[in-house]
Length: 189
Image 1 (cartoon, rainbow, N blue to C red):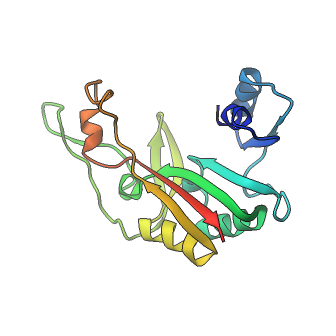
Image 2: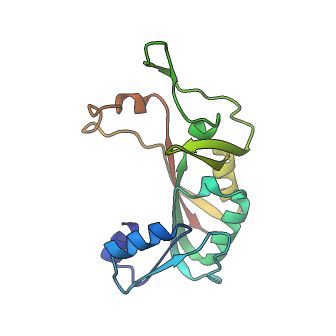
Image 3: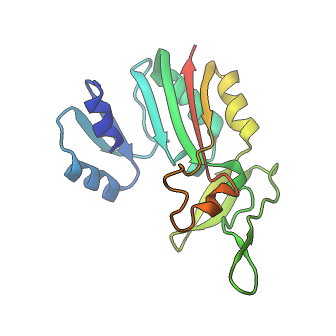
């Protein structure tokens, strides 16, 4: 959907990539606009050249990469001066412990969300949609200071929470108890 939104807001060309062929095929079926080029490729394998993009948007993929510094360095190379990097990741509070689930009491009610070993960055095994996956935990300091040290200016840092219209939906009040996502936008100097 992001690719469609970019086209609707004036992008002349969009390159949409994902490591999942199913995701690429689904996106292609939903929008086959000729201005969108779909690529089934991992971030690590991708190479777009120097200063070719006005904006790079990464949604929920950075916490699967072993090296955040390599990511920032590569995106910095791809972006034109004044270009933007916009990304979202699972919030470091959410990725710190590893199992990413609430603690429940004997009655099955939520007691609290565990945060442990926050400052121990690195590889964590987690369960996502019933499958074991490898994610990489990083602190908020690492996410932000790496951008600053690699030639970016922070524009926005957001820890989204349910809107007032959503707060009465099942489970939404619990989403006010801990941050789950982190959104960052930065501009290449």
